[in-house]
Structure formats: C-alpha cells, structure tokens
Image: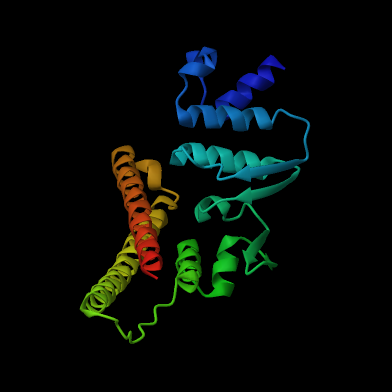
Length: 229
C-alpha cells in the first residue's frame, strides 16, 4: 500500500520531500491534486467532478486527465475546460429551458452539432435571451418634472444598451484570443521550450482573467438595464 500511495502521489506531481508536507501548508492547487488523488484510492465506481481543473496548471491538468482516462468507473464531469473534456467523455448533457438533451461524443462533437465555437457562446446567447426587452413607450407626463425624468431614463437606457453591445463585442474578441492560446497549448511539442510555454501559459491565464472581468461587466450592465425598468 505504501508503494502504491507513493506512486499515486508521484503521478499527481508530489515527489521527494513533498510527500511529507503537512496539508495545511499546501497551496490551493496542491490541495486540489491531493483531494483528487485520495478519490482514486477509494473503492468507488462513480465520480462526480465539479470544475476539477480549477487551480490546476497545465501539467497537473494533464496528469488528472490521464488518471481519469485510466479510471474504470463512470464519471459525471461539470467543466468549462473543453481541452480537458476532449477525449475524456463520451456523452454531453445540456440543460436548457427546463429540459435535458443528450449528445453523443465529446465536447467538440457537441460544439460542432450546435454550430458554435465555444462554450461561452452558449452563456452569451442564453443571457441575451433572458435580458429584459426594452420598449420605450410615450409617456404623458403630468408635469414638466415627469417629462424630464422620463427623458433622463430613456437616455440612460440607450447608453446602457450601447455599452452592452460594446461589451459583447469585447467578450467575443477575448474569447477568440483564449481559443488561440488553447490551440497553442494543445500542441504535442508545447512543453519542449519551457521558457516559451511558461510565457504562453501566463498570457493565457491573464486573458482568462480578462474574460471573467469582461463577463462581470456585461452582467452588471444587464442588471442596470433591468433596474431601469
């Protein structure tokens, strides 16, 4: 058992003196790797994984993916990391409009059938459909103050709507850059140049962070528009 544990720890990038570290001193990524390694030691035949690649670097993701591909049981995986999902799953389940639809194949087969380029597109389209529809109706104001207030609100709505369009264009641009970085990192010789791969990985993480911020701005604009009524 000791040999098996050491081998499993080594597979999850814990080697040498690192295997004797206390859990409390581990980083977030190391704790995630340790939790996943413990799962594979349990006599279970069904895993439920919610965003298992969070806090993991590219190498750790590869280790986890290979371990799961060697796993004999069934898995239910929730993830936005399509490179991680590619080849790992054989069915995609979509929850939409209170209904469940199944697709055969992995995430790329799903994207191809839906005729979209990224999972983010689904979120943008879904939230756009749920966004409040703005209909500006003429208002008969009882006094000058009411008329001026309505003009101000209409002006604010137009400004927010314009900002939403700009935010969606920015999100699309960032997503294209993220996709390009993912394409580079999926190359078989990506890690052959350690300095270059580290630089690309850093740029990729920065771009993902930029995407998260852009999505937050877009969501905030939708809320502002809804609050204006």
